[in-house]
Length: 100
Image (cartoon, rainbow, N blue to C red; front, side):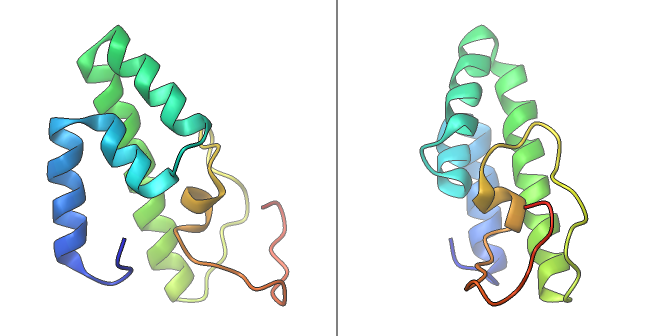
């Protein structure tokens, strides 16, 4: 996903409304979060939506805080993907991030 493009965020939300697992795949990749979302979507369409939008909220919130130089003190509950936990921002091994 393009980091600063609001059009990509709107496109991600539209995709998530149609197919929640695809939206989760776009921000988290093929990890445990995707498997959890597929299971929740199979159990009921709305639980899959709730989980997907929660992951997107954490992703965009962490991304915006990371741009301001604020590092999250602890991991978001129920989020297994490091990409979502960091908001898509990468650390190159020179910045110490406690708890991540």
